[in-house]
Image: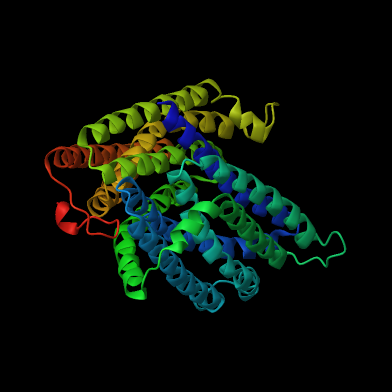
Amino acid sequence: MREIYKLAIPLGLANLLMLANTIVDTIMLGAVGAEALAGATLGIQLFLLLVVFGDGVVLAFAPAYTQSLGADDKPGRAAVMRGTILVCLGLSFVSIGIMYAAEHLFVFFGIDAELSSISGDYNRIAALSVFPMLLSIAGWELASAHDKASCVLVASILGFLANVVLNWVFIYGNLGFTAMGVTGASLATLISSLIILGTIATYLRKELRVLFGHKVTLSVSLKSAVQVLKLGAPIGVIEIATVGFFASSTYLISIYGADVLAAHAIAYQVTELAIVFVLGFGEAATIKIGLLFGTLRGPDIKEMVHNLISGCIFISLLLCVLMIVFASGIPKLYFGFEPSSLERSQSLATQLILIGATFTILDALQIVYLGILRGLQDTAIPMMYVLLGYWVVGVPAGLLLSGPIGLGSQGIWYGLTIGLLAVCVGLFWRLKKRIAEVMEMPLASNGNGILNAEHFS
């Protein structure tokens, strides 16, 4: 269990720092003015949407690479590395095209021309950050596979600090630089992403030297890229579906007024912090299972699955208890400790945090289930369970509970919980089936670190 925590906790903390970068950008741009913040937010949200999808696709590097690593297939590892780089390049070119066209698309859809122009100022530089960010994700997984997760945390800390300092320099015009506002924020994002990538590459110079020391033809690299994309595209869809599912709650709750929306925002942020930390367990699950998958040791895989789920449940229960204990105090950090007209928001925020504490456990379970299934190179069927659970069960349940049944905003949160429960049930049965197949079926490698499709059903 210790080796799981040793891998998962640094990754979880690194995830929190990545989230903190966005929060810092928003806070520091807010000091420039409402218009700058509004315009930048349009660009930031588009940028994050593209990065989230790309992040999901590139996560396929981990199961493909670790399966080759576990099988001691050095040429396969080299092919997966090159294939993933090609995927990162392709996704980056598409993202750059979308971000450069976004300003005109915003105007076409009726968004204020000035705000669209400001978003364009952000997008033109931020678009260049997509490639180093996606490469950093691959480096993140590579470091974890070689038991160097601490370097990911170090790189994330350096990137976060650099982003804060560079925002201060470029946004406000300090240390002799001209104040750049929104453009300065995007420039800080670009430089900090390069710092993260450079730090990880420095830590992994030995492993990278070995990987790039193997000659891999372009045709093999392209074949590997296609298979990484095939494995990763469903993960990208899962990432987008998840973000959209939770974001939908904000829009559904907005009809209940500012006080209710403020309470939701507080509870949502608290829950998000817990969930983002638990993402480290999903990443650790992929690495651990992928390594064992390469060795073809079914009993060891089954034991690791048990340990991963147990470890994740323990951490999620701990987070749940903390949220319950501090549920009434957390809203006061936002609204102050004196009675005021915001008392209703404080009370409702407390109630929503308590509901969030419950579904944090379910979210943690689906995160580790998905991580394990990724390690078994099973992504397409889990994607279907996620889409059905979130959008066919969760959202309609929230609408029913909040409207006809009359639970209001709490009904939306109960809908989130029901959606997560549905996903967990589906993924549990999928995992149970896959473990049975792993225990019974002889697995054959196709020579490039990715198992043949006929092994999955």
